[in-house]
Image (cartoon, rainbow, N blue to C red; front, side, top):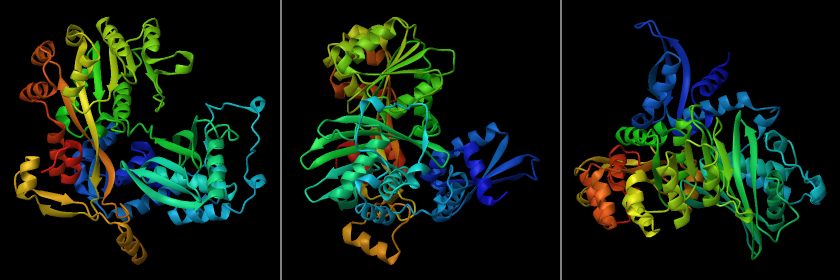
Length: 548
């Protein structure tokens, strides 16, 4: 057995390739522990500071197989090289795929070459016929099909693969007057990716629409679809949406990471105390649990993780989602909101109550009807999860009261509110360590002189210069950050909070009561992450909405 094959088997058995890439972790092998007589799993990690958040998770995975853990530190580039070699061991029908380059330059070259292809050589038919339409849901194709196709198909596949590998959440294809631009959202920040001639952009959009089972002849109406492919032994899903813009058809694709490792509360909530309290709340037999935050703060991921923990096979779990982002699997039944057919959140909830549910997920509470119906379901012995657009746990309560939910229903049904944000993780390779200054200390509450990390953010010309010199950080590509981590505040509804609701106190007053009862605010959680050198003061300022 080659080293690469051994590593790949260990990755698949205990973790996942995507998770290892994002956390710079690689299992190297299993050997006998001469002292204990047992077996130990040697795990290389790119930065030992990450052990504070992932160490217990790794030990738990290894412990299931009766293995001890031994951690060693290796350079991040060495770990990524190990993972790249391991990835080649599991390319499905991948003869010749190992010769393909997935860099940004390679993608641009493929797009330029594709610009010369005629429509008849693109590998798909531009004539759409309803009679020939086939909906394939159960069959997941391999991206090797596109990689062995035309230049435009290769370019499309490379964009999807590179995005999934590099932590991209959204891909934007934007038509301009004389060109098409591809921009990506990485770690919550939009970045320019590549530009291409208009003809290549039109062909690329058509190719991706075809992969998403959309009508490629329809360019004047908005469409929704999903790309589902397998690569490197894993399933990749992209939710796709098109809209007619001034200069052509814009397309946005969101990467849906349904990896079971990523949908784990042990990974999402790094603070053990808050994770334990949240688990105690979701184990209650009835009531309503609210997860709040702005768009893109990870609410759906948190709820998916909670439902997977609830899915023991002994309860009936149903969800109403708009749209369905994660395939939760197990025994969970998922239902999409279809407003054109009258299938709204409120109507689905009424339907669910006739389906003998134990746990109900309402994807979003947007109106008084849905809010009150959710409370009624919670009062009748069901456990209800829902999301809310609000800035904090306390403001979630005032938002529900503004929706005219009676205070007595809130007090009898509400079990807890989890507010959250996503913060960028500082790159451990190119960031610098320094002591926190007096001003930062007053803002964060951390002791002056505490060692923190500062991101090395490179802009425009400096980044290009470093790239040409070969000195650009291979981990973050000069952005200073790589990956994201959640910040949370959990408000458990106790008697003091119930009194606050009854008195209809303001958001600030409710938050004061919650803090007096031991609640960690988002700012305090973020300060803890800064102290652990996982993020920066500037990221903390963003989620706090305050400056020095």
